[in-house]
Image (cartoon, rainbow, N blue to C red; front, side, top):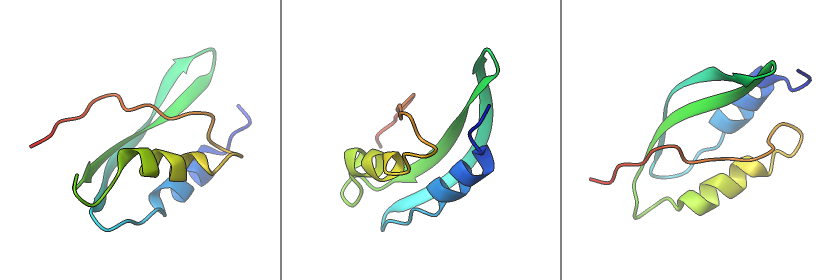
Length: 75
């Protein structure tokens, strides 16, 4: 458990984009003492590309190994 999860959370939530609103977040146990940061967010489809957002998150190579979209709903 070497990753500073608070730094990870702070770095991700510092990402600001027009059309992006961060919601709740929590640490979820994956197994073997490994945790992942789970985030809720709302994006305006016309303004925010999920690919671009994931790329910005993954730029934090010291903290981020990968990203996944678990659920999405378009209105």
